[in-house]
Length: 306
Image (cartoon, rainbow, N blue to C red):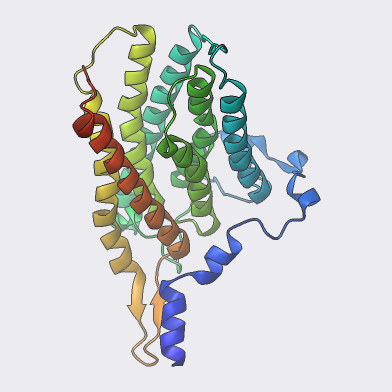
């Protein structure tokens, strides 16, 4: 029974999920963040990058959850305040053009930077191609590869602006959009606690999709009348992104899990199993929501895409 109980706890990280919400804070301490300890030099790309919660800017647990909760609350407060029929939405003129161009270029930088450093890890270190999936507990991967994870993490705060532009314009806003921005910043934050290498897979897929997605938004912000034939493929790309994440999870699981022949207890070779499970659960939720959105937008209601 001990082995069975231990194996269940090893495969289902109950303690991780219990400790994930910020219940350890009092109401007063939850809103206190010591910004004076933040080391802003960590924003500069470095081969020596090291995540340190409370020192790395934006890394404090209460700051992450406070930001995510504040995002949702503000979105619904703005929606409510603009809900009157006589209330007009805001016109942002050129701001969405600049905003979407920034995110398209930012995504390209992260994608190319991560690819370059994965290539170096795979060809010039002992990790090989496994660097894309597993950071071994015995010799965890460190350095600039996690800087790209960190830059990706920061971008998720900036992407909150997407929603505020939509809401302030009084444009339709779906649950998928709100949930995606709310939970992703928490998901990526969990990657840093144990230095999960598998997060690089999500980073590469998501930034690649975002290069094209934000470029599309940039083009349509420049000229609202333009018709771009590959618009519907953006959602298809996101569906493919979350679908392929389950296939690419196999190498992580194969490298990570092992059974002790003496005790029969399951162990882990790689860092970050708990955040891996949390990420995959949310990937499944995203996949369901994106498929539902795609069916409604491009098949059910036959919304024009060109």
